[in-house]
Length: 612
Image (spheres, rainbow, N blue to C red):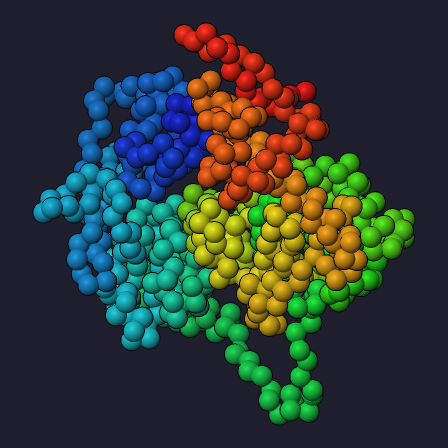
């Protein structure tokens, strides 16, 4: 048994990160953000670790670098004192769907050494080391596609020479480069609609390989079955199996018939006697039961307050801003606000909806995860597959234990730690929540921000495509009016709008306010908007030097005139900016200073912001 290296030392040398028992690091020659090489710490392996490179790296060269840095022990001198003699044991060419050569892998062997694979891509009429950004495809792709079109079963082996043996037996067979650790999500769509039989090696990595391939092809519409060949020795595979082609066909028929479920269609005769039921909603028109609803809007709009108020109304059994809400336990989970902020908001929400806080005990579940280090609901492996994280299981348990049919999750930036522009990662994450919503029957509302381009969501369009329901809130900063609209609706009418205002730490319908109160709130909001714009302009000018400073009196450097047209003024004209200047003087948030002007005898009066 070898002494296992310190994973943090491995990560430091390779420029990677430690994830459990693995170190994910860039493959030599790739960018620092690449994570194509994985070093698994394993005391039972030679040198105490196993190196896998998914994008053409040389595992032995990576180990040699770790030796040079002192992380791994020096290579032991062989008794003969002679370096191993490597020989090529097979070369496997990969082609695209039309037969164009893309790349090849070469298997190399030496006595007493673990096998090695070297990858090369076909570029400008010659072989070039490494795969670079070449399209990755399953082995023997043209034959596989033809077999799928003909309705034949596809056999999936862990290695190219095993696929070649299966092909020599008369089967349509495939593999992937770099064996057990080479699966990539883009391989899955190739097998859509096919029947795939996976032949794992007889060891733990072989089983893990089979499960990864099965999950990958089934997620793309294939029917996949794992077939364990009988009589294999430990670590054995199809190369060691002594059965015939007919034996393999018989085993295949048996495993498929044993696991194949009958296809069930709706019993229309029985349904004809039952009245159909419309989709049920936890929140009228906005949040259907058993679905994920994406709730987006800018940071100033008050999504968090709306979410907590919505959950409060469900627990209290009262409408929310005129919308019918299913009465019952509800969860509001936030990663941004602490317990004190939740308490402050809750007291004001209870006053607004006419419900005592103590009466909501056991029905309203407020959860603050601010500052927690494990908020992510899932983690992504190097191949893009999603694994539910402990936080997801805690959410599952909470939904089931409380019986909540409404859960508001605030917000996606903390719960999803993948790449929001990666359609695959986004879809897998939303599907994880959709599965939870379907299994519990709850409506899950996921809060998110719009992107800088002005779309109603941030990142990939997969966010919108993956949900059946989306609501959007917009905020008019001048009037403080919020408008809630249905952005995507598979179960209700799209585009319906709800208008409401902030009033004493709760939201109220515009129609529920008296004209005087509505005008008062609008005036406060307008003044706040003007003041914020004036201060933003002042800060922008203050960092540009004394020559760009502004003053309080009409003249060349008069602040309202200078600020008009600046981006920070947000379209405000000189009269509005003068009103803001006068208010800010009155509230002592700005003051006038007289300063010397370098090289000039006269002094200059400028406006400065008062800091406390």
